[in-house]
Length: 425
Ligand SMILES: C[S@@+](CC[C@H](N)C(=O)[O-])C[C@H]1O[C@@H](n2cnc3c(N)ncnc32)[C@H](O)[C@@H]1O
Image (tube, rainbow, N blue to C red; front, top):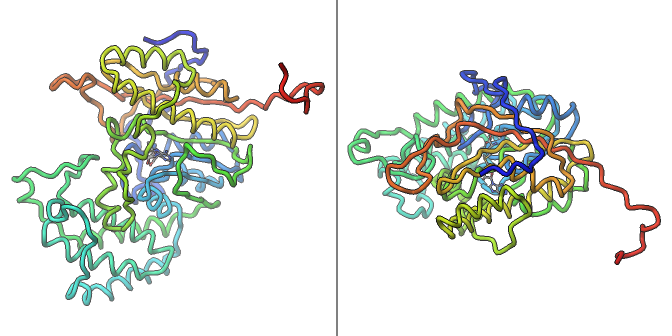
């Protein structure tokens, strides 16, 4: 399936695996998120690709793992994500808070709780609220949310992120899944979450995390679509890009929208349209396939089995091409973009995303340097799936990640005699 024409060299390097190493340092443990980049990989890329004071962009920042490591190492960080819950978590993880401010906010919540628990405000209008939450957890969740809302920033954002984890743990959805699956009846009968106790334990832990986090630069987080230009940023204004894009569309890979939905609904962050459809590859794009021999071969092979899936796969890479265009515009000449990707299978066809993105990036002035292959020892990802959608037919997938390094070439200056001469024919 692989088309050998691609010039990029793949190199397996076990020193990037970090098997068994702790992943909870700094503020990384503040809130879980699907497919988080492990801190060691983020920190190593930050150290290798930038200097203190540089600006690092993560156009798919998720919960902010790259941003945390960047600002801890004195790099200015800019994170973009289309998921409002991700933006909230990333803000909470990148904002240090003085212990006195955290304590004042926690005291405020404790002082407000008794009256709110005695007369809880009505819950937000969440569809099928009592399917996803036992009746007894709804009033304490309403009381907690009301108490947190009246705290002061920056502690409020941290406490809202803490509340988000409590919503997930207090809900009837299986804690081990990204998608929304309700516990089976027998498990549900044993499920007796206490939202207030959960909040107190997690708030104490998170308060300690943000109070001991001492970054030496700032992070900016924007709720935006990485397919669109960041119009206020000048060309070449970013020194390095470090990111892990989605592995494919949210419906058939990691459902960030489903993972976030209950929290987002409680927090009033949910939009009117299904987030998973708005994320990369979420909807079919009516555009020609971007130029890549590896992509053409893969899409043709999938189309022989299922044309609808082939269109969905093509749409994801059309979207990725738009993101790469903006990365190429923003990255300074000589700057490097590191894209950490997974090569999933669709309909038994391996999608070499690292090579496809190398193909798409080269004409944009992003020169493929190499691909480092690492094993995924700890990442919370589906490691087995049914690539053919045949019940019972499972295959290993996503056991490795591919770190694609692209260097921004200096734009080629127009020959002097053509400058300003209009279109040559
Ligand atoms: C693999 S996750 C990033 C995880 C992150 N590295 C972390 O450690 O938490 C990919 C992210 O891309 C985001 N995303 C998908 N489509 C997007 C788009 N068009 N614009 C911006 N973000 C998008 C998803 O919401 C998700 O948070």
